[in-house]
Image (tube, rainbow, N blue to C red; front, top):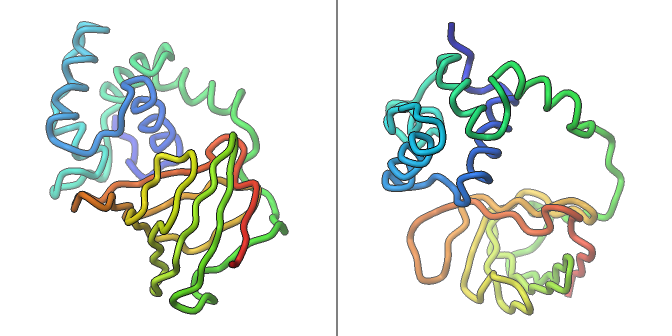
Length: 193
């Protein structure tokens, strides 16, 4: 039996596996390391090519994944099985949908060159410049791992919500990743400078 890879539960499982593993899965070597970690923890073997397809890293992609693979990954993530992982999500996950009316900035409404200051807990302040086409670059950073020159895409920035950055590039790198700021408490401030 197979499950379509685009289900929200599989997305949650991927996130949980990365959390347990301790790093995002973004290179061939990290997938090999995950295979080794799963084998060491559970004495179960998964193919790195299967994992690469499941995570969307492989150009071959995947439309579905076997329940066996999901069972192994669920056990690695701390559940007894895929079914148990899904039950835990339903029991302990907060409601994921609601109306939102807080302060927000829509990227498409900004003029290129606009400056924003973003803040989040515990004491992070980052100034960004809007480049156009939903793209921002970090100008100044205080107490954050973001550095001047880092850049990212974002359609909307909302107070009280995490800032999810797509196509995130470190200034010194050409490898795109994703980045989230204020994951637990959301952004505490948004100022147009």
